[in-house]
Image 1: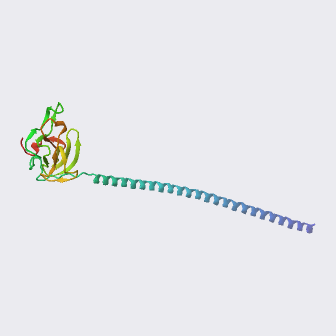
Image 2: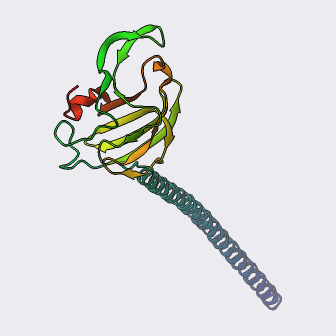
Image 3: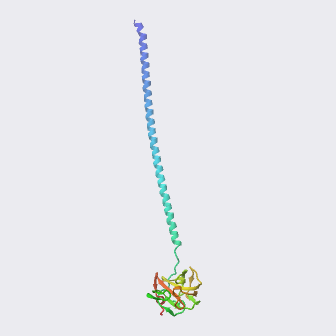
Amino acid sequence: MATKDKPNNRNLRALFSVICLCIIALGLIVYFSTQSAKNELVNEATTVKQTQTTEVQKRVTVKESTTEQKTERDNSTTAENKKTTTTTQKATMQAGDTNTPYKSFYKYPCEETAVAGYSEELVRNETMGDYRSHTAVDFKCSTGGKVCAINDGLVISVKKDNLLGKVIEIDHGGKLVARYCGLETINVSEGDYVTIGQTLGTLGTVPFELKSESHLHFETLIDGKYVNPLDVMAKSE
């Protein structure tokens, strides 16, 4: 009886050992599977975070690039504006000891006789048949006679006016601008520098003063305001 039990005990121990090994093996499999899954989850989370960081960096880079481009355009526009302002500035006649209004010497533009004086009050205009101010001095001059510059100056414009006829406008310095009106021929052009006594052209007619005797309609302005030419040139009527 005892002899027959020994093989059975050995078989039970062997079976028990196999079961234990299976349990241990199963435990190891479960353990390593769990660790592997955790590592994969960690790696996936890390990858997502890195991707988000990369996208944020890209967005920041685009914004900074846009700001730099805008700054460059603004700077370029400012430089162009400055350049335009510099190149479009008009030349002017500088004031000096020989061309100071009311003080320096000025020549008559033609004859010395004045047929109509300066008046800011309304006076009768026979040609137009109305009353208006006469902000000029009309110097007697024969048709075709020479008209001369009263002082050195810069020719601002040469134009034709319906009332004044052909007009030469000259900057004589010290903010003094003279208008020589009613010319027939003109010898100068815009941008020319002239000297005192230089012939500017010959006399024609003044359309809105045709009923007056032949004359040069002569206007002077200081800082854009009409002034009496005889006062400016220190002459008397």
